[in-house]
Image (tube, rainbow, N blue to C red; front, top):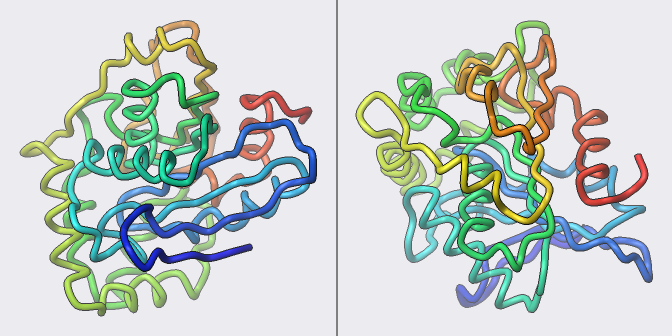
Length: 266
């Protein structure tokens, strides 16, 4: 897997996983959630490597894009990703987005549907006003590994065993100058008082491309009911005993659904 950080901000930093020679599936672009980075997708990129090429970007204000010239809400991130896709010469991509990255992916598809082959959205932001704003604000400000561990546990299903290294590495990332202040600023743009801004779900369903939504019943960040009563053409997949991080909790199932959505055999 190739990791690249641009010397000039023509495109966001990314990790690339090469696919098979002569593969005819479009490139997958992975977009992480609030407070994460592109490394969250390593397992899925590896699982899909034999079938398709993939990229995982760091969104503005995250990972190696901490010092990106403009940071903020999902709309700002969508603009940066779309510019990056264009700068890299990608004519059409399959977008996979988690949480805030799901909102980013949806906005890209709404703004430039001709560049998107499919949307796979994992517990996406913007599908309803409810959001655990207290948890996100505490998570943005946290720097202590013990506090980080307690907060991260809220992102996963109740039976999931949190990897020991996760809290430590996440806390270490916050020690970088400006990291906490940047995340706090992004959080305040995502959250509108005590709720979140919402996407036009009807317009999303009218896009000429397949859309899948994946959610866990134990999501304590964005309630699963936001997946209920979506327009019928949106394929909705609800998993029991799964929290807000389905790509880490049930990676095999998520990989299978991504392959279905981009037209690869499962």
